[in-house]
Image (cartoon, rainbow, N blue to C red; front, side, top):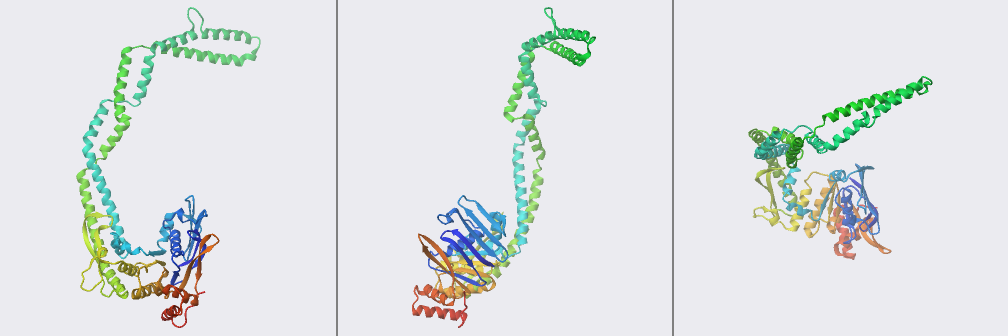
Length: 526
């Protein structure tokens, strides 16, 4: 049950706290006073869509908190668009808030009856009555069936391009590309293209180490240095460590000389070899331009060809799944048909209590050619308001008032949430129909908490709690004020709702309405 609603900086509301009770809570007031704004605020804290446009002028945020028996929900929206949502004091997402909110309160707006005209509504109504396991099982098989269909379609597409893939594989294989061959070719071509300069630099390096006819090499100079140190060490061993390092250097220089000599001897400048390498690289570059990395692409298409499933096997698997799907769809249809009979019977009873004594309410079932995520049923609501008329499509024969009463009747038999809100569902009603709607709302409120925004005195007069919403000016600003009416104040408010004034006749009429509903002793509301 909703205990309290706290609203700050939301539309016309600067700051209010409103307490609700069990049974029927009526909200009344002049048009534009802020009654529906409160319902919008409640919707926002339950996770419904809202925007920064709802933030009160000159404020940076709005804050809404709803206190239920079960938990406390709060939502703060700043002008930057940042949502701060908490469930029992812990941060939560908008999705989590919406999931919890939809199970706490049912908001039934004045345009809710138009939902009846939507194509998916008949199925939604019946699926709320049947065993949910039937729909869950069907949807699981449907997902399996859909997945297998996509797999088969993909396999058929792959089959059509198999010839292309096999030709590409053959082209790449015929090139006999070696691992890292691109890098090796580029390195070899670079070397062959600069062979003369490389040979000159290598020979110069060797001569610097070994010497030539014109000069002694580095190795000879190091040998002379070593001889000097050997002579020096006979007189003083302080440079013994330097002598060891010189020995090591001499060994390294000698080994370096051997490597450079071998490298120089191996050099071979061959224009023919350069042409051969360049031609090979050009051939491989053509493959690289077509496939990116040819070896990676080869692995990819090889795996794709390996994954190619047998189409006949997939078709057989799909037929087996489709058979199970058909059985599950039929189970779903039978359950809906059975539910529709009881649903229609109970709706007709409620419509009779609303003065539509000859109303007929039925569901028409047709089988769709294809499976959908919710079965193969196409369901339409058929309706007739008068005796002797055969039921026809609801959207074509029902008036606005009839839609309102049908929608209200449906609310009485749907699965119960802890609270229900009726937001000006009395629009366009009056006279005896208004009395009948009032009695039905009162009956609903006996089994669950009900909040009702209304302009009808007939509905206000059956309330357990009557709350007045008033718009007043404070300085240069307009604000909304909340007031729980006591019994005398209720009489004046119902009189105003009845005739727009508080004449002796309207006040007496209001007293009579309350006595009719509550007896001589009117319920006191502090």
